[in-house]
Image (cartoon, rainbow, N blue to C red; front, side, top):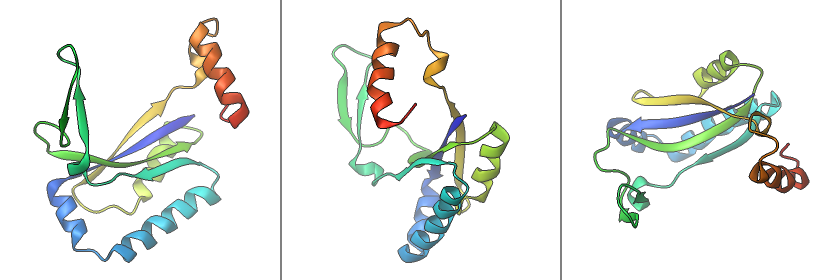
Length: 138
């Protein structure tokens, strides 16, 4: 089962992170990712750039409106993720607890449904299966 660990940090946590040497952050994240790779559970992981560089497309009107900046009012910012392939939600939780993150940061754990959970006779599911097979993603 795949789970996405969504990293969210408050403004205070982001400010506290600015006080930590960047090489120290890279070292701790590198060790964590290395543990995930050695355990054979890491599918993908990415950090995200500064939220001030983001663009939000709002679909509450037609046509949708694109605006600069993260969101309207923010208390937490989405700033990275891991996708793990683990045996259970509990294992995903255990890996999340080991992430080298500071106070004010949270990891949201969400299951990533498998393509096999969608109607297999659907045209678009068939196309997605055909797209993914050559990449080894099935």
